[in-house]
Length: 421
Image 1 (cartoon, helix red, strand yellow):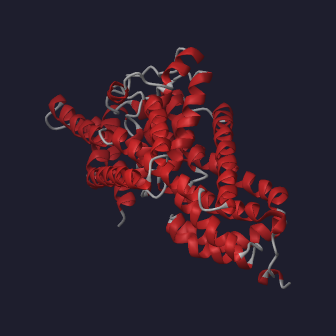
Image 2 (cartoon, rainbow, N blue to C red; image 1 turned 135 degrees about the vertical axis):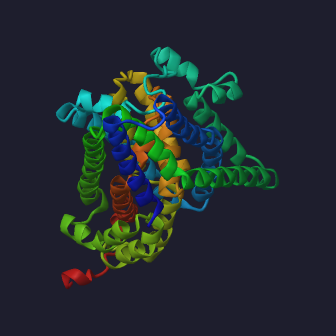
Image 3 (tube, helix red, strand yellow; image 1 turned 180 degrees about the vertical axis):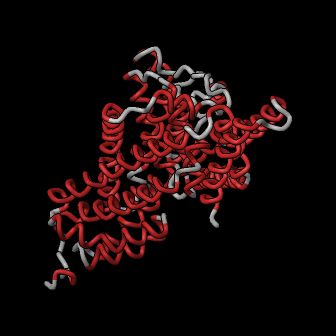
């Protein structure tokens, strides 16, 4: 059984064990409850300690990858521009769509209280660096002391500093640049190894956290978790539908042909939950069904898989907005800008990470930028299996749409076997 399923089983087992202890008593009483809470808090802290070094190193190496790709020629630069437009559009969509969904289908306040009941320090709500409005937002863009900003979890300042550092590295001579890039690649790989070690204990950590929820509030959290999964999936489905609508005029392809042509790649994405594993099917379908030239498909699609995740801002912001509503956190306009910029930067830097690693590494920095507590994230990680399927399907759909858009009016439409042309 995969680790994702083990974590899901641990979540359910913890909720039921906590509910049973609530009904019939817990051996050891308050002392045992405190010990269980400490185990969950320890596991959460072990994840949190990797955030700053991993985010910084991933952004530096990710920017290096983009700069290298842009230097390879006009087609690559055009692809990067299409990616950037899609990422910006998906980020704006994410904010409006998620907030609209919460207006139409708000979280039950009782359910929110139940889910937060067992999370460590759940009542502590951080003040975001942008809570003071536009002036505070502008000030936070350039941390006077990056080390102190890291210690204070001032993630936006760290992201801006990492981006500036990454672009500065690309201006160095190859002899000076290579050791720095290799150093940060080694740092990111080391942090990922640590995260993998911590995630091996995820069933234990999630069991402890969910048992705390069950102990305090019984099984009422299950309904809220189901609501959370539905909201994140709905936000992603909306984005996928927008991709279909967007590719018709800009990709110069019929809706039916595009929809029919990408199905094989979407099936692979559904079964593997991996954009990389879907790459061969994407290249084949782009060439044979979508009329994308071999040269464009061979450059754009691997570049898309290696550099960008189009659905990441939507999925990640949907999670963060849900957590904000759970805690009743009011997000100021300047904070939305900070969260959106962080979401875009993180979506680039976290490409290629395994799903469970990328969930926490991608979402926690956005939470910190918006002043949203992260204590409940491990419980949401346990039910990430279903949203992750739609993340991958959305990425594959957008990658193929981008390839078709980059091909543009110069495309030489190859016969579509399914249409019998």
